[in-house]
Image (cartoon, rainbow, N blue to C red):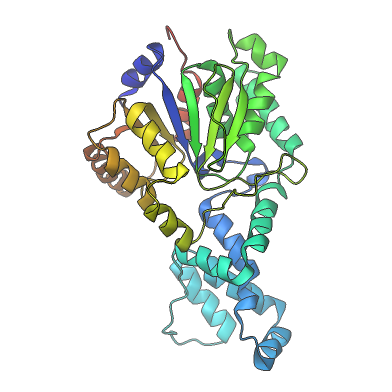
Length: 364
């Protein structure tokens, strides 16, 4: 699994940048789903009714449509299971025959429909509601307490937000983690870091906890600080704070729809592209919780292929059926051909994130 190679990079205290995605928010409290699909489906559900014609007929359709029918339309647009769609279409239209219409929307199209329908200000507010409306800071703190109890073997039950706190734990133990590049909009990682570093039970367990202050960078004016007591967190897709917390700067831009991704692709001098290329080419990088199927990630990796000074590690895991293992094996070989060192764990993500949380500088 190339794990010894990663351990050696930590022992030698090579400068490391973490590249993070929505997967680190997996297994949130109360079963809340923070995946990319869940966010888009949440936004699309608000946009559906505004897509009706803006005339008297459209208004009449909206007025006459029952709440159950509206719910069915939302499910058809958002459900990824094709077999479910056929059942839903029959329920909505009262038809037994096959309907020759495909309700599927690719992710980027969903995002573009949402932005064009709701407008920038509304959909940013809806993302804020999606992120924090169901997850108060006290719930993250409770998950942190459960994580520390788990570390101290007071419980065998794997806590909520286990991946998130494992990453925070990894950062606080290792001074060679110099930067974080995240595709997430939320501040959950900052919350997790701040909780652990102030938790007496955590400090008693760890010999040396970094006294760091997360430094959020979400626009080109963001000041980088590479001193020992700061950790730069680059929100390359934008940053959305809690309702009553720090305010995002005015130039902060949320990257969600097709036009925003295309603009970023065209602007090779943007701070987002420049910062990512810098870390990919100069640092040892660890990819956690994100998909390399994303074209932006593939493009950046292509640019630095054969030109990077450190190892590029990709954290992934399995434990599915034989068919999934074959698929994983093919994808992992593809990633290795493109310059990545794949750390694949057949025991699942819970096991590999536990191992990540235990890595530390110096002797293991």
